[in-house]
Length: 70
Image 1 (cartoon, helix red, strand yellow):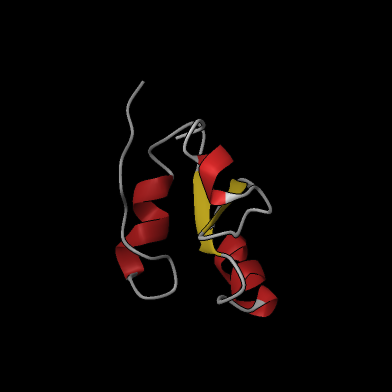
Image 2: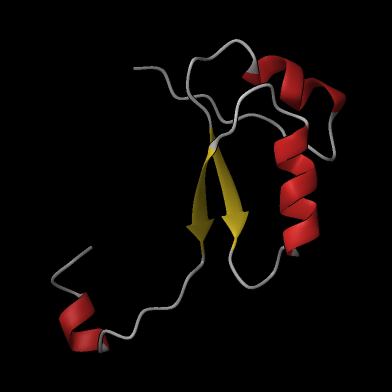
């Protein structure tokens, strides 16, 4: 497995081109910060639909319980 941290799709001309080199892509999106139209725009720059992972989400788990699930 190879993991590549590529440049942001909408801020770099090379991001989408480099993503074509991989079979599977994951688009990491900052939760509650990145507007949905920007996410859709980024997805449209790719040849295949990526898996979307939300970063910076909040959990309802109490802090003391969250320590058990790093």
